Image (cartoon, rainbow, N blue to C red; front, side, top):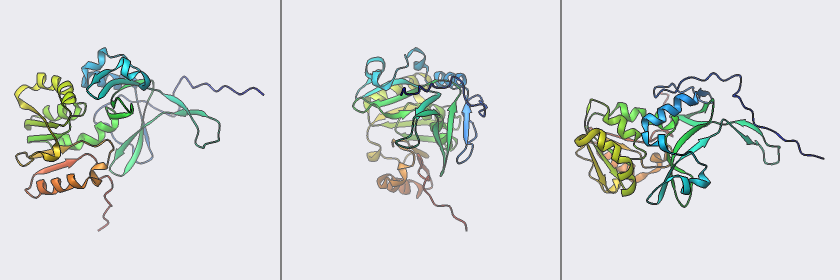
Amino acid sequence: MKSKTVELPTKISKYEKPIPFDEKFKHPGGGGAITFTAKSFQKWIEKAMPITKSMKPCHHTQAKNDGIIIGEYVFYLRPYPTWHMASPFVFFTLRPTRTGLQIYNRTTVAIARFDAVVNIPILASQSILEPWMSLTPNEVLTLRNSVRRSKGNVAIAGLGLGWLARKVLERKQVTHLTIVEKCDCVADFFGKSLIEDFGDRLTIVHGDAYDFDWSPFDVSLWDVWQGYGEAQDDYEFQGIRRDIESTGKICIGWGQNVFRETSYN
């Protein structure tokens, strides 16, 4: 008996209504989904990270060859498919499944999709080529509050791919930004364009955020964890946060309230 060949669809679901990607997009609610046009999202990526315009997209297995080596990391563009083959159970036949990225809003999770293939910037360890840092709708959604609350003398723990730092520096309410980045290579590579664009409004410190003095800053933003919500279980960070907030200043960790219980009082 011949096995049946299942081909992936060439179009998105008829129930999806793609919209242009915008940094102010509204979370669709727990269990909901939102579809962005790939063209608008890719245009936004290129604006947020101009270096991606000249990069060749590649699968993670080819990242070391086609990506950019940054110390122990590799930076590359990963094609993100519109559909993929999957099975909801171990022994069931694979079927075409609509690909989606999780997006968080406190304790609710939704899905972000695209109407065509998009190329997502990924920073991964060379030894384990899974994303350590990336630039997706979830990063935008979950860091918007940090941007909005930034004012005066601001500091960020962890440079990442630089999107948060750039948005903070674009705010007229911010007088100066200090970035504390443990990896020298990451700081030098992703900090270069920020220094060129913002000059003496930016200081990059190569060091460990946990050993840094946060007392001079009006707002402290932490983004040093791989998973959203891991700040909640980082007891060393929580101690630092309490010390900062006891002086009346602001300290925000990425996803620090994601597991907080809702009060009904």
